[in-house]
Image (cartoon, rainbow, N blue to C red; front, side, top):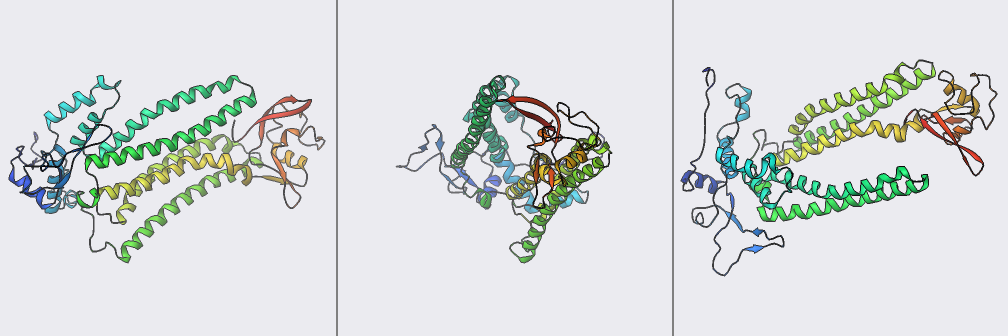
Length: 430
């Protein structure tokens, strides 16, 4: 380096296709390569998208003139696999012998990829199979699969955007008609998700066929340095995997308990006339969600290493599932709590509805827009005065009137066939 405190070491194969060392390494690892010269009587298959479906065979001395040239990603993959077999790079980094290692970019390939795919002028263009091949040839199949999914998603997202735009007219329709429009959009959304998943599943299968990905994880993938072959398949490995799964369950249970605990403390403080947590609970829950999600992103990697995965693909699949399941739970449970659990958990139960209502509104006062304007107490409210609670209370098996944890805080009165009805927003949803 310029300040002479680091030494850069470059390990590479020759750029020539006649590099015997590269050919020997590919043969040693039984590396699969596409055939470009088929024997007489055989023809290359073409799928219904016009893509060539090549035959893949193991690279060897006797067939090296019949297979295609090594791509950039082939060279990197073979070199990294050979390097990991010679030395434990992660251990060298851990001991401070090596600071980092990475595959070096090739200027010519990177410039061509930028011009045909990553240039800012290509933003308005729809992705093509050729673009996907360029990404695959440089970055590899795993990155290419992501962009295959992303391209398919953007393509079909246009259909969903059109449907969402049409459904937005419900705001200008009668209440019952707007409700039907929203229900129709919900049904359409479910169908769109199922259709998208099925269509991408088909495209994924087609990509696997064209790219020769059958049994790729067991044949082509590099063995991770952390993999312990002595532990693989033993009861010890099963115990570690069970422990990792138990940690996932325990983490979501603790998080759910924290959210429910905040809700319970909020109710107790509110009943005592202390509204501080009611004002700050959204911020407290938001901070808890962020901290929990960040903490899990660091902790999950350690758990997945306990599972002793042999290949990077298996490691990444398990990591993605573990991260996504907990992060989705952390993101959605607070809303599920408000939407479904709060109504039943933090109920206020008294012998009569009037007593329960006075207990709920004793400190905050009656909801705006109701017929009630008197002090709390005395108990002089009629059934009509408490009509705004009709949809927010029930009588339990002990005969007590229980007002839901999500109770009205503001109402508007409407007349339906001469009968007054209240439309209310609650402390859960404003």
